[in-house]
Amino acid sequence: MTSQTITTTQLNLNAAYELLAQARRACAERGFAATIAITDAGGHLRVFERADNAPFLTVSVAIDKAWTAASFGMSTSQWNQYMAEPTVAPLAQHPRLTPVGGGAPIIIDGQIAGGIGISGGSSVQDHEAAEEALRAMNLIG
Image (cartoon, helix red, strand yellow):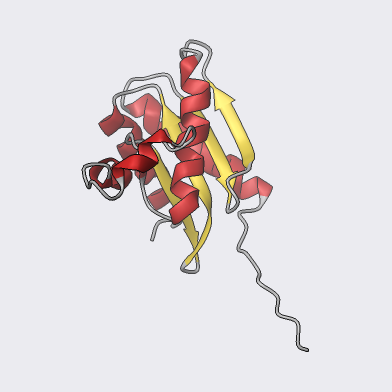
């Protein structure tokens, strides 16, 4: 019997904090205070920040956006589009699935390494800030 090992790619802690800083900058450039969550490939929270004046609802939303993006390796904006399909729509009942723009997968060497979730602006602003932060660090697929 042979054993098989599956390895996952991980964003190290220093890089996660740098991604957080890039996201904070992208949100500030768009003029909104944000909550930013970064998860590992399993959707577990790795780095987190809530701006002083970001509403408290943004906490769980940002975390769940990152979790949603990491789960299938696609942005929460894409999930929003899929929810219109009758065969996918029942997933909207899942308590953590967040099909609102602002979550994006973190991709390293073509593999899902986690997700970033931003909440505090409009869904378009959140999405643009997340993608800009990922592009700045070459972590986008």
